[in-house]
Length: 418
Length: 194
Image 1: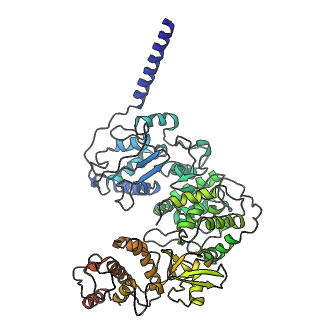
Image 2: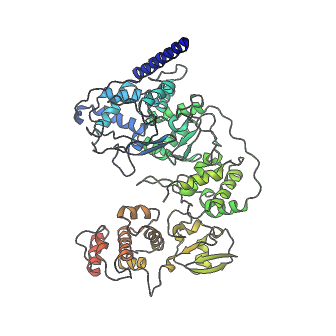
């Protein structure tokens, strides 16, 4: 009896100590508010560099609601755990980050902690931004603090217990978060290191292009091995790339700066705004990223063509009437269609992007010229769409059939579309 | 033989199943409203409705359309008895060369059937896939607004008088309900610079 009670007592003590230890570990002090710095107080060159970094980081895409004011937040980020709404990062003192000092901003980037001392959800990719150096973080701060303040609260997150308690994020960080800064790799040259710093830091390529584990953390051993984003598949951009023609640094540079490449296709889905932003980034930054990603892709063996599938008359007929006029035409990209054997949407690991593009087509970015393709969501039945996909995948992509196309079609159909 | 339902009538057509609907409409059924523009599904002049959704008939083979309801401009009304969309486009004199207009009317029809109270921004966004090279966009937008108010107004029969609601958003206060004055005003405002 006595022994058991002593055991229970010790266990309670240990448990209490663990909880106390975790609370101490998780505790972050608030950083005192500052008066919103005057726009004129920032160095112009820093603001300019900050604008480029914001473009590299694609900040405005997440921190702007559809049809909303830039950086005023409110965009829903749907995760497997619940919906998180991006925050207002304009320098508005009440609803934005007007009271944040440079130090508070830097702590949010480095550690994922708000000025008030709350842990931030990793939907804000501080697991990447932690690599951003002091000068770049300050430049980004200068750019953000010189934007138009917008007053407006963003919706509350929809997360189940215990994820709605921010202290739970401290546990996530304990398991998965590796604090920066970026450590240059002496085995590579300066351009490669700059590319790695930008791609893995502010560019956070891996946030979409790396698969995640069941707790939503990127799987380090599969870095850039392909992930999911907003109902789209983010292709593997490491040695597992399924592009028929291997990418090289020049191809990647052209793709990132223009949003398309004549033998690889157009940026679409969530990559479209990324490419649009990158158009305003200095060439040397894009060349550095291209050099790094090309090296991650390395020397790879192109996918081996499979046996062509037996006849699929429905798919072939739809292709010849609806697709061939562009995709077998002579007009070059971006206004003509890519030969589909070259498209990773066709040779890649998932049917998702091909389904999305066939259903919704491609629209050029608002107010600019760009690739255009009509969508076929209202004409094709699910069965016809599946026949077309089977034909394109087997006969043009020369790859074995995907599995799960039927459910992927159903899922794509269930998403909102006009 | 494929059976197509066009503007409420059934037709047995002899064309190959992978023939684009546009060719069948124009060559076999003599329904010439839908136009061949680019042939690539990029300009919108061939737009028709399939089960109420705007569809590019130049890239849609008829094999996909069995049992579906196809509507062309001919189905919106006749020269003697035009429907609201047609009346609105005539009243606003929206056609310059006119080649894009049937497609514009059909896409606008699809929008208004679903949402007769579409805002200016929604109309603009919805019509974006359809191109007009003459530059009559402002008149097209006014015609769609006019058609919308005809369809939703207290008297939904086509009217030669512009309902007051038609001019509230796209036009300025100088606009009034008199069609003739309205037309003179708009011509003055919109004459292209030469």
